[in-house]
Length: 62
Ligand SMILES: [Zn+2]
Image (cartoon, rainbow, N blue to C red; front, side):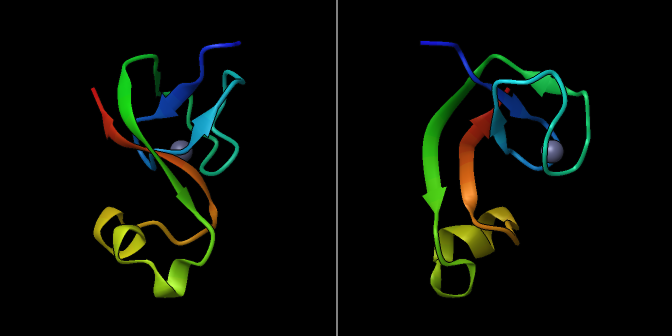
C-alpha cells in the first residue's frame, strides 16, 4: 500500500505530490488519525478542522 501524504494546509490525504484540494505542495508523510468526512454540514469534526469538502483527511499533521 502506498503511503499517503497529508497536506499541511488543509489536511487532505493524497498519494500525489500536489494536494488535490488546495494545490499546495506542502505535504507531510507524518500524520495521524484518519478522518472520513461524508457530510460536511452535519459533521462536528469537519467544523472543528475547518473542512468544507467531503473527503479523507488527517486529524494531525506534523
Ligand atoms: Zn491542501
